[in-house]
Amino acid sequence: METPYPKPISPTQTRIGWIGIGVMGAAMASHILSAGYSLTVYARTPSKASSLTSQGAHLADSPQQLACQSDIVFTMVGNPQDVKQVVLGTNGILSTLNPGAVIVDHTSSSPSLAREIYTSAREKGCWSIDAPVSGGDIGAREGKLAIFAGGERSVVEWLKPLFDLMGRVTYMGQAGCGQSCKIGNQIMVGGNLLGLSEGLVFAEKAGLDLRKFMGAIRGGAAGSMAMELFGGRMIDRDFKPGGFVEYMVKDLGLGVDVVKEDEDERVVVLPGAALCKQLFSSMVANGDGKLGTQGLITAVERINGN
Image 1 (cartoon, rainbow, N blue to C red):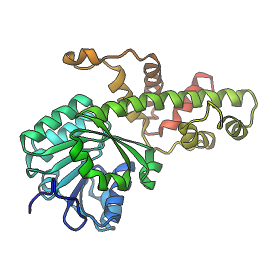
Image 2: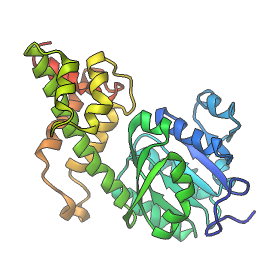
Image 3: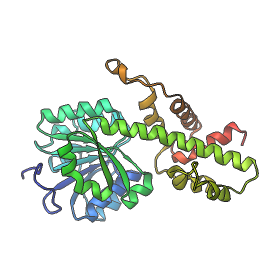
Image 4: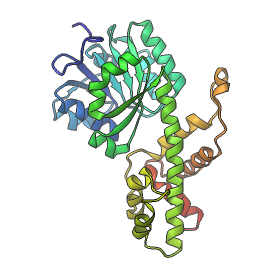
């Protein structure tokens, strides 16, 4: 079967593959299914795919099998090393991907790895787009994610019917620019979460009603999307993950840690992000790495003896 790019995407002809069906990946993949596309998924633990297979998804035995049966392969895995293994590894996607097919990596990963994948894909006559997302579990479920895309503009525009099912895509530039945008996003999210956490801890110590406090300030300069998404969860002690604390450590590390020697000019001094990373890292050290990022308030409370 001829792979589709640049033929228009069609639910009746375009075959979609999906690797990574965690909290967000499963919700994102379900929108593809609901739109009538043929979807094949791969999961290291097949039982985790049951909700998608019950909706009509097919289950592949390996990434290679999935790749050779797909025109577009989405990945939404944990870390850059997972991305590298599943895409570039000996038994990875690119080993069996058909010429003209497209890889879309939604994982929050390394800009330099995104560029490496792009180069490797082009050598095989394929395409790759780095397209990390923001919006957490709620955005994934509601199809309202912010999607940051890097790679060829024409390929991003071609993929827009699929991106539109999951949220709103913004083209950021060449390969790696989507990942750089996500890192900048996470730096700002971390700062917002820290301010929100400290504000709530202060207000509680001052004897304020926390819900009245949020209601009073949300219309002013202190109001933020972070407050709307996470303020109530912090107050309710609801730390179920939309995004894991351990992934925030990874994301912030991509911004503040030393990068490859040949990219020294990209290093930026980010004291606030470094502090946020340290606080999130303390949560991982205390066994809270699987909490949602709104659990940052517990680190502030711990410092204050709570």
